[in-house]
Length: 190
Length: 109
Ligand SMILES: [Zn+2]
Image (cartoon, rainbow over all chains, first blue to last red; front, side, top):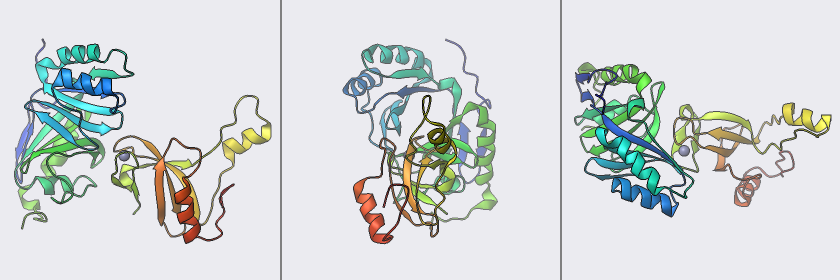
């Protein structure tokens, strides 16, 4: 196993929320019909979670599955296990029209921690971040400022943001900018 | 601002999440086609003031192509529907007929 080389070396920023580049998140992209029984069972066997419904997440500890489209899921696991999980998943996928790839080093993941995270995300993405519209258990694939991104909330004050590794620097900068102390709008916190 | 509901992920996608894909339901004419058909397939497009059928892609989202029926004059959106079809669904056409009596778009009316 090789060492994890983070795009930004684990950069962090403390403002309206605490932003941290997470060390080594295992990520496996699965393409295939998510309604296919073979595929559902393969994910259950290899990752221990049931495939989530439309725009939903499923978690069991460090393992997780995020709904990306009707034929794409992003599967999460410990970084060091990603390669083995792909092998196991591919084995279980025999006979199904599907493809699984380890994308852990092709993506960067940022954790947002703090009660202002809804506001920080809302400044960057065209998404209704009110508690009635978005909350834990849901995932949203969208853009943040000018780059593609996906995010989900682990709990009321924790969110994770995924982007392509090549734009990690840009993502960290816009998140930090949106989280500047002096820029609070207090729209969602009353 | 244009909001289209993606029929695949259900998101009310704002225009900046979308990519416009031109006219909907073009029939492809390729090798063996007449010059007239090939020319029309390549170049001849509807440019209505009113009801229009278009292709859009949820580019900054689930990534899927879909169809939208809307009014180019008022920007009213009549509905969206999946890409795996060669014509608009009947209930959507009924909706448009009720809202825009006498509309014509290619072979649709
Ligand atoms: Zn979509």
